[in-house]
Image 1 (cartoon, one colour):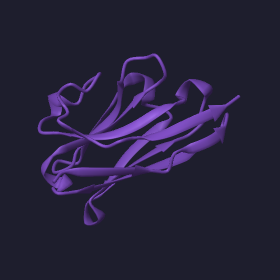
Image 2: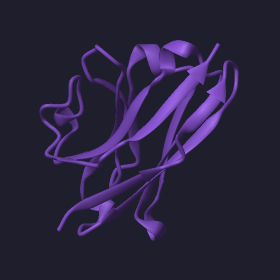
Image 3: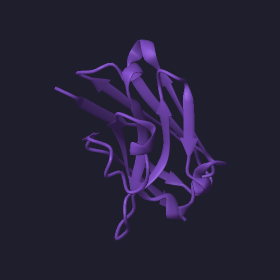
Image 4: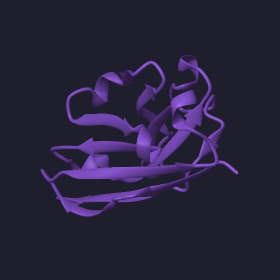
Length: 125
């Protein structure tokens, strides 16, 4: 069974940083495209960044290019996301997800077939 367990969310003050983890099981991330998405209250889910793990290539949305960093540790079958300079508008549930090809990784994530339950980040002003 394909599963993701996200962790690392929480309450943080404006300007702070967090690193999220996503432990995958039931498959090997090296064979897929994996990535992070988020959904803020009342908003459509949006892509943050993805990795085509086997090729080592990453893609970011233009809005996340500066403050967000995605990487993987294949030996741990785990995906990570570091967010710096957190702002109140970053308040959202953050999800990791899996697709089979690069084009699957686009907002709002309809091409991504497997999802974690998410981890909540709340940024206080």
